[in-house]
Each structure stands twice: as C-alpha cells, then as structure tokens.
Amino acid sequence: MQEANQELINAHELARALDLSVDTIWRYTRENKIPYLKLSGKQYRYRLIEVLRALSGEQGEDNKPVSKYISESNGAAELAAEEQRGYEATAERVSYEDYLKLPEKEGYSYEVLDGVLVKDPSPNVFHQRIVPRLWSVLDKYFKTVDVGGEVFIAPLDVTLGSYTVVQPDLLYVSGRRSELVRFERIDGAPDLVVEVISKPGTGKDRIRKKKIYQDSGIQHYWMIDPAERTLECYSLRDGLYAFIAGGAGSDIVEHPEFEGLKIELVRLWNR
Image 1 (cartoon, rainbow, N blue to C red):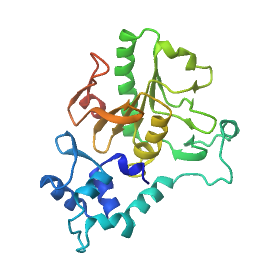
Image 2: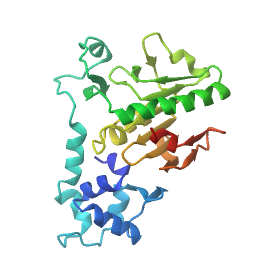
Image 3: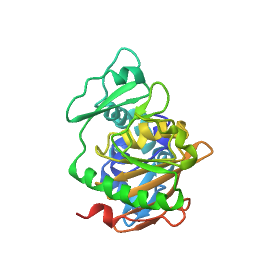
Image 4: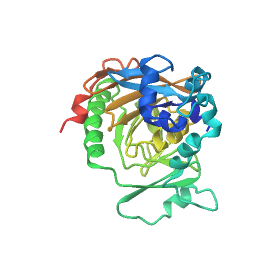
C-alpha cells in the first residue's frame, strides 16, 4: 500500500486507515493538527503518510500513538481488502485476448486492471445523470478548441497494454492523437479520462485505476464523487499526478490547462 499512502483520500477513508472515528479526523482538521487540501466548503483531502508524520506524537482513541496504527491496526489492510472486492480470482493474468472471449453478462461490466479481471454492477441513476451532462459540456468545449478531437462516453474499451482494459466513464482524445481511435476501441492513452465513483471507499478509482492511468501517461485524470458532490482534476507532473483544480457543491471549476473551460458543478447534481 505504499503507493496508496501517497494518494489523496477523504476523511472517511483516512479514519478507516487510522482506525479512528470520523469526528476525530474532523477535530484534527479544525485544530490544524494534520495537513489537508481544501477543495471547497467542508470538502477536504488528505495524504495518509503526511498525516501519520504530523501525528507521530499524538495519542489515539486508545491512548496509543497514532503513528503505530499503520502497522498495529487493520486500517491499511482493510483498505487493501476492500479494494480487492469485486475482483475475479484467476490463476493466470487476464489478457486483452482473454477479455474478448468473456461471455456478456447482463447488468455487469468488465475491466482488466494489470491482468486482474474486475466485474462491476451497472451504475446507479445519479451516476447516469452526471455522465451525459459532463459529456455535453466537454463535447461543446473541445469542438470549439480542437476540431479533430473527440469526447467519448462509456462503455468503450481503452487498451493500455496487453493486460489492462478499462472503460472510463468519459474520455477525450485530441485531434493530434486520432490514430488511437480504432473501430472497436481506443488503443493507447487518451488525453483525458474521467471516472464517476460508483462505489465509494473501495479504492478502485481513487487508488488502483489512478495509478494505472498515471503509469500509462494519461495527462489528465478527473474524479467525480457523487456522494460528496466533488470534482477533482489531476495532471501529470514529472510522471506523478498533481492536484490542479477542483470544487464541490455549487462551485464553478475552471481548469488552468483548458483555457475557457468552466464547469458549473450544480448542473451536474440537479435533476
């Protein structure tokens, strides 16, 4: 879980990792005892390793130093276990060719993440409201600034090597990289991928897929959390994702690397 410890997580995920209550995390935040990134309003993100360093001398809820929780508690192990739920057990790594042979199962979608087959149920209604609304905003914007570019909506396979097949909720391929667009799939790293989190707390989008997208060289990765009504925008900096822009609730998000793009978040949430 070393890579995961470097990722931005929310208060609930942090509380679980440290085996503390969410109220304790909020108290530490209010008292500035732990480092955090403020998105908007009361929306905060944390890096587990930085929090552990800050709390190295603090006492936890059972009077043990908080820094010990990473090894003495089940917190990190629980995050790893939850991340694996829904993953199909296979004796060998699953390839793209294996993926193509899978029988269709109504109500489920499949992805292959580093050779591991992942089966997920169909997304919920809120998820399906958000995706086309954001697609409409992005499609209009990129048609203006990049005539040859295209914005696609799931389900559409994206192959990132022989053992990774993903289906981002939204993706953008610029006109200068149109060779990636094949008849049956996108073969290679798009310029932008967007994931709308359907199962909060599993770590699939926030940890596992984020690392895959980062290692594949996808320049822009956005995550939308419908439960918290947040948008987080990351961009590659020296091979690692850096938080570039974000917002929550009724904020208007302006991305510094897409001039003129404004996303009114309230339009994503409202019916």
